[in-house]
Figure (cartoon, rainbow, N blue to C red):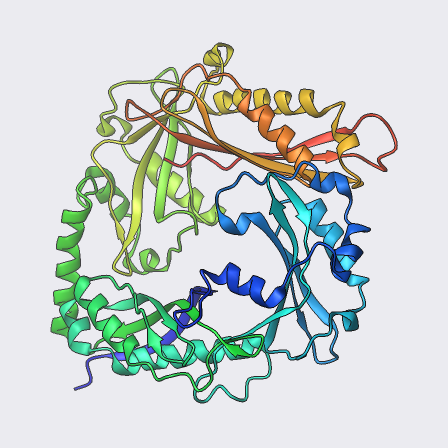
Length: 519
């Protein structure tokens, strides 16, 4: 009898380069410099020196210790007509990126002397690099062009996307055809089995440094064994036509099915037991869980899809001064599903939740449905998660509910940004119309502002924005979860309408609210 059927599809993946073992380069940055030969006085540097606005570089932050933050690269591809496409610049400042892209579009591509024009290649130019604590124009003398490794059966691929997809299919088929059904059975797997595949391909095309991940240690060992047997590449990855090392990293998914009813029952029992061990606070037999089970059929439960940002479906509410639940909502994907769960909750005797303390500024949360082992199950906990938002300043403490408390903080942040940018923002950008800035920060368990990150069209605005946020005094009270002070993250984005950029003031500030708090 056939116990397992493997059906293949793939999910998010990432590909990156690795350090070679066969050349003397310290890392890929040194290898890149060897081929690119950047020079501040070459033709490309002189071209960009006349076209990159100096004020976009003068305040560029280069104090990041991460090495790839110390270079700005421009990548592009070439289409069938030998025209440049897919131009990408990797600086953190949108105005600088736009300036570089527009300058490159007007550059005569023939002057780059590209030795091989091919849709299979990705082309890279260094544009900027650090010099001390400054970012300077230091362009490549030569174009660096990279090509993926080619495996048996992928030779007909005509562009990078098709070559990448072919490689993915080859790896997926190889894993599905060779992974042990016995090991899958021992792991008690049914439904989707996600496998993280990672390995290096050296300059000779051989597979090495296999480091895969699977749900269990036994399956991980088996996956590593199978991937290590993946056939050698016919052609290794190349950089400027020379073999180079390459790291391949994907997440593939196998769909595991079984015709064995006894095995299905064993899997369900195993997973139910494991749930009780791994999620001690969750209980499928609380009164609230049993209440929802009366209204949600097995068929409806199986069809529920969770939001991408949440591993389940949760119920939120506040309590008014009379001790009654208000502002009841869920994180459901659709309004109809939200309304259905809210109505079911309203039928539950609220006093059975046994919530002792009542604080109108707190938000209460119960899990209702989670996914475990590719199956939706109704669960809850005996006591709710209780979240108190941070209190930005003492005046916000008089808020009538948690929403008003959040609004008080958001308005305070907005006032800080507006008041500090009002007279200076126009002089710091050449853009017109609406320009966007965004920032995030954390409030630690002592109420201090930490981990400030800012993003803006250019470095000067970004630096100023960061300083504004860092100047915020300690908040009056940090956030609390179940009575314990916790770290919380706040994110904001603002759009400033600078119109035609011809007057002294900007207008029409608009705000995109930060995400709803998750705790």
